[in-house]
Length: 334
Image 1: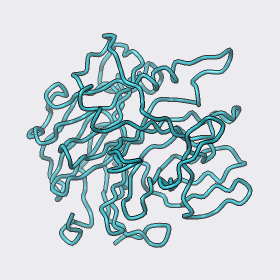
Image 2 (image 1 turned 90 degrees about the vertical axis):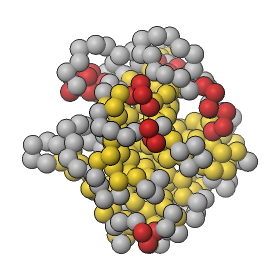
Image 3 (image 1 turned 120 degrees about the vertical axis):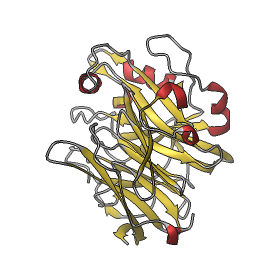
Image 4 (image 1 turned 60 degrees about the vertical axis):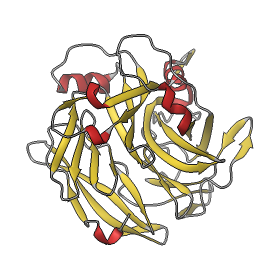
């Protein structure tokens, strides 16, 4: 991607939707996840097309250059958030709890207000469905699973192109089994055969992750919001809503080292990279950078796009996508 030709700022326009959840680019177009809408613009911010009518929560998105698709986390929950999404759309149905990887054929997004049926297929994630529904006495949601959000594609992890999906994690300060981030790894090429049109309310078979990986960060508020692989550091950057447990540093961003996987107490784990600020009591490292939770893209050569989200007085939502350069262990606007 030619950084010199990329604009320093891209404005999404004002959207009558919940706030922006993620961004992706193919170098020609920008893609914005606005929870129930996938918006496609050119790099000047002019709308090219959109996919409307999603009745679930479309979260973090990632562009794959090998098949020219945008992938995203898609969750349907019959909780206060899920019911709020439906109310905002003027819908009165009840969606069953289910969690998916969504795939959009973005070359076919050529006009506004397209139906998801025209360009989107999904694959159901059995691990997430089971962990979200899990209950043991008075304890609910294994690992604190609130669903999924962060997603990124790693070109080579253990010799395979892999797609990573991060759990949402409830910020329940009364329990300590929710202090890890949970990443599900999928063999990217093997996923292709499992995608199918979305059929809500119909029991469909899902797939299981090739690997479940834990990362110790201390608890966060709803887990990893955005994941982004950075080839320059061979790390995955994880942007979160800061946690509330006072014993942890509660950073807004963590850097996950892909080069040193290890096993501990029967769990596959990845360590945090030696980047950012060290919290000596817990030995947790993180970065105090305010952006990333609503979208980030590693462009290569140390350059990044970050979403700076906002709202208008009449409650419309927008994103300013701004160009940054990695400055030591943090980032500076270009």
